[in-house]
Length: 99
Image (tube, rainbow, N blue to C red; front, side, top):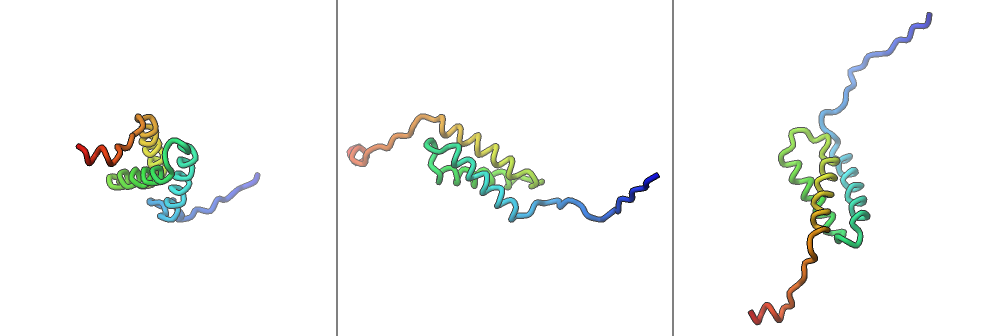
């Protein structure tokens, strides 16, 4: 008979994720969404949307473990709505001054 002994340790998973890891994952999420919405939404707008979605979610979060995944989902939802919205047209400055 073979006996296997598994040592017990006091190691456990951290209760909060590393801020460095969150930044790394959010950078990956941002890069993915920039590629996904290329030609539809400007990269700066994608970055701003990801940052705002993260800030909005973090403000109410009690558990931050899944913030990057939730941020990706929320930012995608916002960007899809933005991409589906009718194109915004700029009003020429001459029309503004004549009004």
